[in-house]
View 1 (cartoon, rainbow, N blue to C red):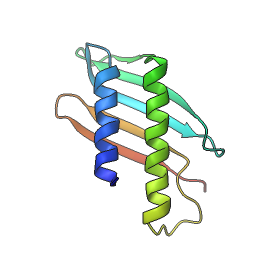
View 2: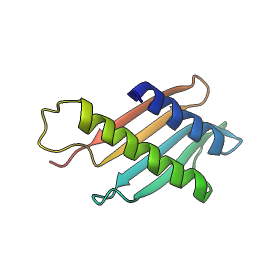
View 3: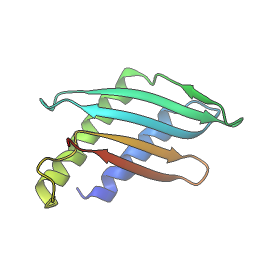
View 4: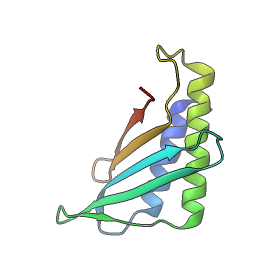
Length: 109
């Protein structure tokens, strides 16, 4: 599986689990070092430009954790990083009006 397929899966999952009045989704994720879970914060911007939080169902959270682990494994296996460690977390932003996704990876300093 390539990284573009993984990004598409992340985007689709967020579209499917987002609140009906959302125009932008913002997810902060921190993966566990044991590779068996993740902590999340799910926020969205509504049609009135108000920032809110939401809590997707457990299946969406489990699926997102699996997909993020797939993405981290892809990078570990395929990308030669100049950093001593690979990313441990990320902030995902999905603009539902343009369907553009951005992922900012977090590294240990």
